[in-house]
Image 1 (tube, rainbow over the protein chains, first blue to last red):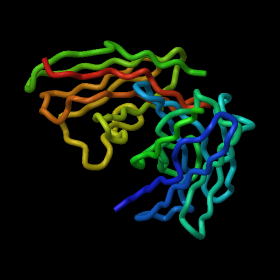
Image 2: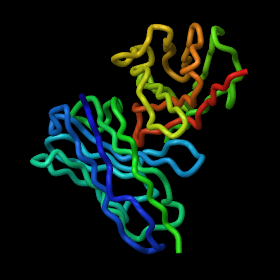
Image 3: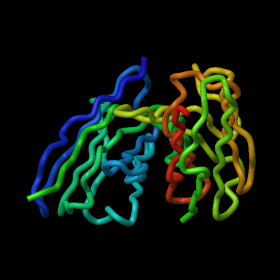
Length: 121
Length: 107
């Protein structure tokens, strides 16, 4: 059974930093691209960042490029999102998502339960 | 980026009725379109991928159709557990984008 367990969310002040983690199990982690998708309170879904399997090529939404860094530790079956210079508009539930193939363009096939990030003074 | 526009924003129907949800893309996405379902307080779940393929474990009452710029998600006979928000999502062009969602509510 596929499981994606996010952690690391919480309350942080504007300008602060946070690292999210996503522990994966139930599938061959290094054979799948992975993404982070966020959802602001009461709003829709926004794709944030993706990383391919094997090569580890990374991609970012314009809204987070230069502030967020996605990475993966295949030996630990874990996905990360390092978030710096956080803003109020980054407040959201952050979902870890498994994609159906190595490439970042593959369909999102499974979602984690999410972790809440709140940016406020 | 590709803008996806979903209609209607809210759809009020009764259990047993047929639901038809639409998604229109600002440019052709071929058949690289998925539908995700989200219930209150839960993570989204993949229903349909590549426009018309049901994901694993998804009941046959859910079907998807369309190509290019116009897509439809149909639920043939609504069950109580189908009342949720539905999002379309394209993966044809970078970045991947989502529609704003259609809320399917009980009438």
